[in-house]
Length: 120
Image (tube, rainbow, N blue to C red):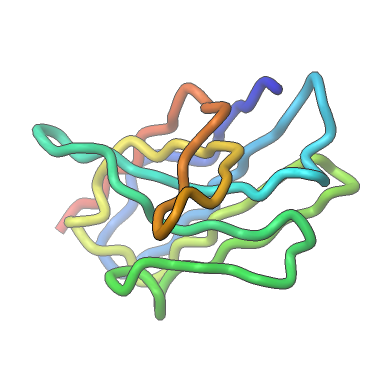
């Protein structure tokens, strides 16, 4: 599976962005998909995931009321809608095909990442 993220960029605090993750090489419909982010000088962290069927999503508390994950299996694409962004959301965002590993989501296939920068 090859994953390519897009939609990143520079946005003012309080604004919105929609990230996309397009897959090729294999259909995404059988994979749960996740979004992760890595801020400068920090470890990569889990942001959220959506089950392969789209009927279950999980988001970390820091973004739960602001971000939404969705997917369109017909388009082989997963989305991360980011609303009311904050400077602390600045990071490289990665999508991944994920699986549940105990209490964690682990990535099996990764995209190259897309930069999101939020200005104050």
